Image 1 (cartoon, rainbow, N blue to C red):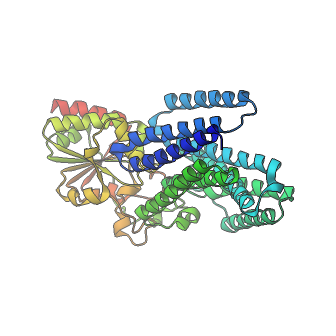
Image 2 (cartoon, rainbow, N blue to C red; image 1 turned 60 degrees about the vertical axis):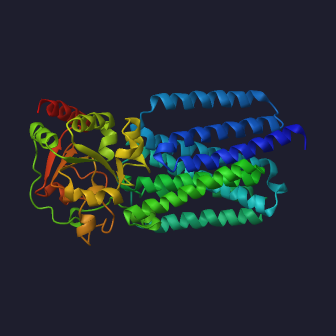
Image 3 (cartoon, rainbow, N blue to C red; image 1 turned 120 degrees about the vertical axis):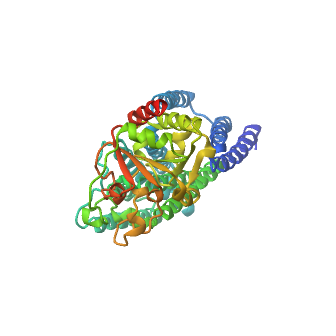
Length: 459
C-alpha cells in the first residue's frame, strides 16, 4: 500500500467512528445538533479520503459535481422551510437511492462479467433497492407536498398486482445473479423496481407517512451498503448498514406507537375509511371565542399544548412558544405533549419546536404526560387528530383501535385549534371534538395563537 491508500483507510476509520457517534448523538434532542455536525464531518472525511486515495481520471466531473451539489444543497437549506422538512427528507432519500442505482448500472456495464457471485448479488440488490426507493420516495414527497392526494390510491386486485410485480422483480434478480450476461433481464429488473416503488407507496395514506419515511430511509441505507460491497468501499458498507438498520428499527418503533404492523401499513390502506368506522360522534362541535379561550388559559394553573401536523402547515411553532412564555410569566405551568407519530416524519414536532427555541425540558413524551392530563386545567390541541382520538382507546371497531394516544379528553378543558370541521388526512371522525369538555377555536393556528397571546395580555 502506498501513502495515499494508508491516508484513505485512516480517513475511512475516522469517518466510520464519526458516523457511529453522530447516530448516538441524534438519539437525543439535546445532542442532536452535535450529532449532525459529526455526521457532516464524517462525510467530509470520507470524501477527502476517497479523492486522495483513488486514481482520478479527470477532475472536471468531480469538481463540477461538488460545485453543483453544493449549490443545490445550499439553496435547499436556505429556502426550504422547517415545515417542509418531511418532503425535503423524502427528496434526499430519492437522490441518494438514485445515485446508488446509477453506480450499480455503471458497474454492471463495465464489470458484470468479471464479478464473483457475492459481488454480483450485491450489485443486483443495490440496483433493485435503489430504484424502488427512488420512485417510492418521489411519491412520498408528492403526497407530503400535496402534489399527489394524501389519501390512499387503491384499486381492485392491487395487492395481487403488487405481488406479481414483486415476484417478477425478484425473479429477474435471481436470473441475472445466475446469468450475468443476461443484459435484458437486468434492465427488466431495473424497470420493475421503479414501478414497484410507485406501487408500494401510492396505497399508503399521509397518516402513515412517519413509518414510510423510516422505511425509505432504511431502503436507501441498505442500497448504499450494497454499493459498498460492489465497490469494495468499507465506509459505504458501515454508513449504509447503520442507516439501513437504524431506519428499520425506527420503523418498528413507529408501528408500535401506532399499534400496527409494517405489513398493515404497507398493505392496509389506512385512510380509505368511512364514517361508520368511527365511534359515537353525535352532537355538535362547540365553538369558543378568543376572549373566552384567553380567559381559560390566563387563569389556569396547568396548561398542556399538544402539537400536530396543523402546527406545521400553519408554521405556528413560534406563536405557540410566545403564548407559552406569556402564560409562564403569569405563573402557569406549561408543558408540551409529544406523540411519536405526530406529523409526517419521525420527530417532526420535536424539530419544529426546537426551531422555535422551545426548551427540551418542556417536551414530554406520551408515557410521561398521559398521567398528568387528569390534573391539567386546559389542554390546547393544535392541528392534531388521530393522536388524540379517544376512539383508539374506547372503540374496538375503530380502524385505529389499540393505538396509543395522548389522552387529552381526561383534562378539565380541551381547546382544539382547527381550520374547519374536516377529518384530516386519515379520514376518521374524532369523538373528542364532540365531548362536553371540548371547544373548538377555528382559523389558522398561527393567527389564532397570536391573537390568543394578545388577549391573554389584556386579561
